[in-house]
Amino acid sequence: MLVCWAVYRNQRLRTIPNIYVVTLAMSDALMAVLCMPMSVVLLITGEWPFSSAVCHFQGFFCFFCALYSLLLMTATAVNRYFRVVKPNLYRQRFKVKSTCISVVAITLFAAFGAGLSSMAQWATFIVHYGKVICFMDFDTPYLDMAYMAYLDVIYISVPIGIITFAYYKIFTTIKQHNQEMNNTRKGATLRLNVEEVKITKALFAAVLGFILCWGPIAIIDMVDSFSAHKLAIPRQVFMLYIYLGFGSCFINPVIYGVMNRAFRAEFLRVLTFWKRKNEVVQLDGTFTVAALSFSQ
Image (cartoon, rainbow, N blue to C red; front, side):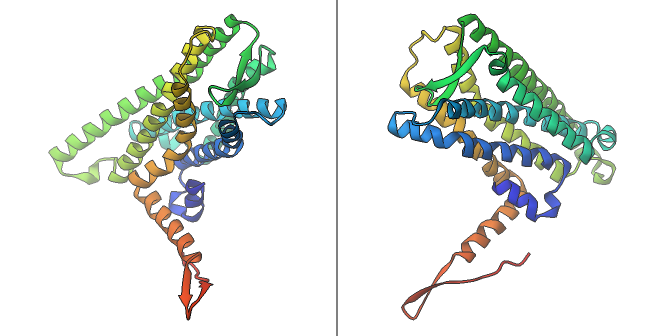
């Protein structure tokens, strides 16, 4: 929630691209709050003490948050594409209202992908002790393979293709911009600025981080499904599965903090505020909590 708090505090961070960034941060927070606790209990105790309804709830939200995050990153890539490559169209098409509508549409599309198997009664969620989450159990192996192929194409391959195309065109435009800068030395005549380039690189780094975490997970799921769950996958691989999935929730604030100056400055202000607010000062052998206020 550090990203959300930073945007709330700093008006300069309340931009159209950051609508997607904040929504992505909320998706990560949902994963941490709604999915991780049950998996931690299962990992520690080796038992599922919750009801089948809770299992269904957790399984759905694990899928939903993963699909939702990738779709939001795709929308962010499209936003960056128009901002950098087609700035005239960007000013016409990307408004706060249209961006919020796109977030709602993405939410519904991700929920449809995560919940279709349950709505159609093709599968139910059961505890998968290897993956340490609740996972879909299909009526037949053919339904399992068909549904995983559907998710892999529509919700993974197509978004990654769009992201790849968008950032390829973006970085090609940035390269041309740099060449023009070197040739003309007239920055005023060019549309890009350093801050826009840094923002784009930070968002691209977030995409790479997501793919590095969820790519192996998608491969494990495909292998497991297309082998009809008969392949003996080592326990270490399944442990990597859960650590990568949940670890992806925490990398975005690190990336934004390292690569985006505005986010980094606001993170430092927030963390400094928390540190000062809870600072313990030793006076005359007694400890008192210093009530220090933080000025904006």
